[in-house]
Amino acid sequence: MSTDVLDESFADALSGVQRLIRRRLRDGLTAPALRGAQIELVRLVASCPGIRVRAAAGKLHLAGNSVSTLVNQLVRAGYLIRETDPADRRSALLHATPAALARLRDWQERRDALVHAELARLGHADRAALAAALPALRRLAENLAEEAHDP
Image (cartoon, rainbow, N blue to C red; front, side):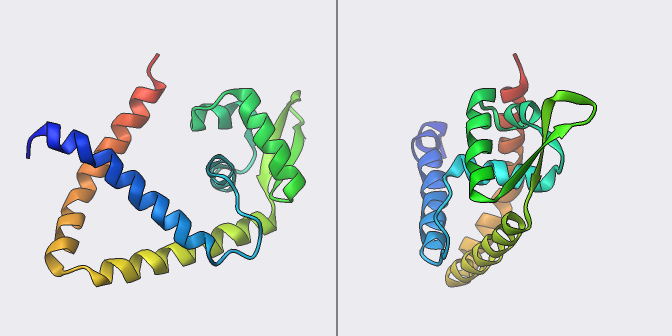
């Protein structure tokens, strides 16, 4: 396949799958939906308890003031706890609340079930093609992350 054909459809296909997964998962929500950046921040804080706002901004490739705004929203919503860093009183450490962790677990379980069900609807050849593409997709993600860190 030429790179022109791949370039034209690849990003659209990935974003379409992601958008449809999010849309399908929103149907079962009992709490207000979180925006994409809010979800990314909660997931990051859950995986890196005690992360500083500045470090979170770097990992998410967002401006510090944008992350501060997200933190304020998520603290008000009861999903994050912001505490003063005892080593540097000017910095805040972030922690996910039990409500956030429960919401992430529920989301993960529902996403896993949805993807499993949809993959099961595909034929063997399509599932094999997707499995074969996983290493290349992971390398693509690594390349994108590396380039985001380069000056």
